[in-house]
Length: 365
Image (cartoon, rainbow, N blue to C red; front, top):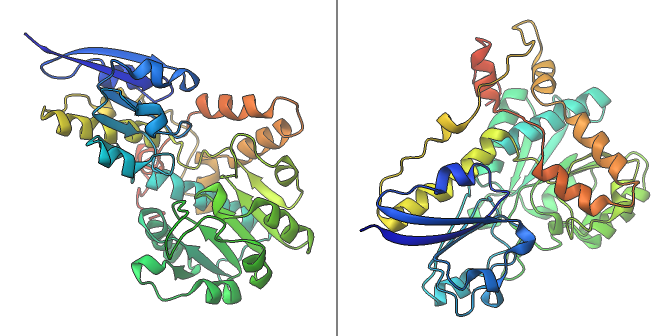
């Protein structure tokens, strides 16, 4: 007789039905629900909860539930009360590390776009990387291949460039930190009005967490100098973001928190929590992420193209910016934000696309 297991999952997790409907030796009851329908009443018979970042996972949600395993198919976990889960002996896992390559591909596309705009010089400008974990480290490696000098700021990792030094000497800052509210190295409003007033550079990029920058202070900073610019993938209070900031002419690239949303990245999000659930249940994983992914459409790439041309062909980021800027002038932005993320156009991992074209898959990293 097989053991019953009830799983409640966010229906927006990529491949959730394919991955979780069958687990070795278990009688699975899988219920996928829109995020808005996942509440305490849905969890009174659940053993496993699988979500993304749009729901608070805390005592209010899980009190008196039989849930013993929680997985979030996201690299961030600031929506999770991990101390509460620990106090209840609930195992928790995230997909940290799964979207690293996707985010760095996003960043490289940003760099090439800024270079084409005349806003970034690989040979002259200094990039201050704030947060040098998986993403920041790979980004730093990629910058080395571009000849872009970097300053690395990450106090918990003992990296030497202080935030004050980065504010003084970097031309552009990019944030890749988690969002934390407490402790010596809290990152909530890490760049506030005071820090922004000290920044001597010209550009700020945020593909980390929206609230690491005080968005009102950022708007004020942009308004003080027409030469300043911002690139934002993450925003405070998503999807109820500050539309005055989105619609500002000096926000040159604006995207709806999709830096890690390549199809391969989303599949990896799912696989990471799938593998950890299998480990928790002490069963062998049988779902193949690669088998679940569709074939890559072959486009017009060639060895004669520059790195910039290749990057922008593989990810035409302007389409995301144009769609978001247009939505920012409408009355239904909140619904658009969620819908665009849910139905995000297919974007594939660069190494796989390059390999299909017989190009060097390590061209960028």
